Image 1 (cartoon, one colour):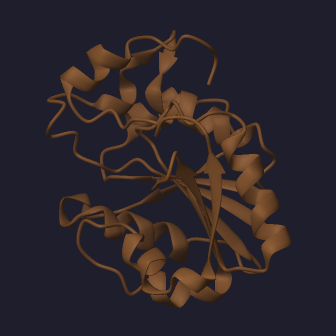
Image 2 (cartoon, one colour):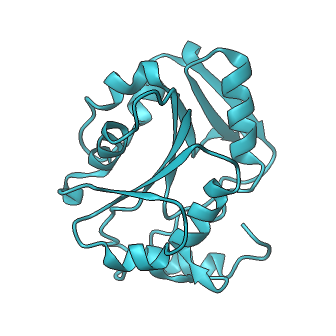
Length: 196
């Protein structure tokens, strides 16, 4: 069983408003991101949210997701990653960690990561966009103990960096999908040119 964990508990400080609720081609950013994960046949999708999350629940109405609360999102991204991993169902053998504010991940990325994970025998599958490692990243259950020991604002990057031999990089000849962190990011990326 492979689950998706969508990190959606950020405080949007740089955006100045709830960035995951911004319109992205007629739907909220977070809905676009979750729909991308839902389209690839993951066994479960967990959305990690902060204590006040009713607007996110509304934005995802009708989608088969389970909400997990990170009670202290101000402590950094690692807290959301840890909350998501701890909430996984027993028997989960892999977790794909995705950023809620990255609605431009191309459709082919996640299926390619799932194939690489299944075929390579390595415990991490990560995309490389024209030579730059990015997100989302798929982790085997054997690494969950390392992940739940994380803290701070680096997410699971340190787990990926710890041993390159256990990482299967999947190359994509395309630019790195952009996060929506600031009003300038949102303006620059505009509305999607094609469905996510």
